Length: 183
Image (cartoon, rainbow, N blue to C red):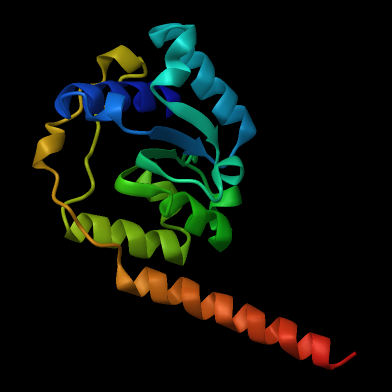
């Protein structure tokens, strides 16, 4: 599960940033309350009951309006053609992807989320800028070994995805204004 990836990622960040994550505000966010609860249980079982001093685990909606230096976003989409649920909501996508001040890590199965054009643009951009890190996963979180995170390159968000989100938002606003004028 993605929860079994989020914990080793957090641990790797804590080790490789030489305490940055302990000095910085770290958040693990997800669109789903059930996943947030599962993440809390996983973090608590490994880090102890006071894990919340090191990392905040919450839903995207609950984290709206706040920021963290480091954000780990657990998308929670498995393989299949059932769609991507809350992830297709552009507003939630915007909130989730803009909470990080310095570092954003998205845990997702790329093949599942690229069914949405906005996520496809983001994944394409991440691949082009060497921001996709394939993680071999055996099903047990402690077996996950992340590559050297220091080798990742800083990248700006893709302008195309941002422009697409802005255009869609403006179109909806225009649509709403048109409906208000008809009354």
